[in-house]
Length: 410
Image: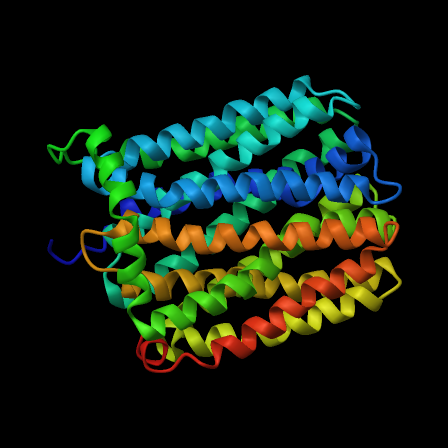
């Protein structure tokens, strides 16, 4: 395979997919639906809503973690990456549209739809991320990765602006439908512009069998490289803290600090704008400085954010802390994605990104359980839960310092 050309049209289509799915991340996961689920559908007086929402997140993440290596192998060997991305995208879209059928008290139906929607969203990211190696040469991957996150945060901001009047009017049903339509409209350019899957000659069933058979080999390939192994251990820990923060920040703001749904949307809008600045501002420095340095600085900030969030008392102070966290949100994710892309052998893009997803999603099983369990065990004390999550940033920071040559040279 020759080095990828820097095709700006394909880069734009790739980035627009991030723009499209970010409305789901912002409105469903980070702000409106998570709070609606915990407070209106389940009830969160004693932390039960926190706990059940944690189960939603953990269940979907463990399913993605278990299936990503096999499906990643199928995408590579059977040549169906684009079709799998389409299937996962529309699983998410359909389930989000069906959120409009949920009423307070319908916990089981809401749980099933939320789990399936998140499987669609997170599962699709395996194949979306794998396209990075096709659309950008090595010397531009940090820049393009950061650009994707930056445009994604712009999509979050637009989605939140569109959601705000619907939320203020109490039309949550229309809010979910808006998110589904947003995802469909802005993901379409990727499906139209990216080339069709190249036929490999291997049937999907055989590719799936090979994926199961060779998972042990894939694990050996990944873990056989010492610096990559060390990085993935560190990544497992620190990205858990990031993911858990995304899943529970609005629940914390709503329950502990009394934010209304409209205030949550405005707060997260400010976070998305700061995340946009952070992702774009550190896109090129990631290539110049190397991802280890960028991730290290980001984790120092994340640890401070967790400590501050656990002790502050006012909405204004929490908003300030949230904006600071926003500047690091895309930074740590983009730098991590650029690093793993630089280490993946040619021809194994989706397979290795599948393993990368396993690490990230498997870690995200733990954090939500920690937050929900601590909150429920302490009678709904979310400050203790935030401190428990903060430990993950410190541990990840320390583990990252064990990584030497590969990261420094990446």
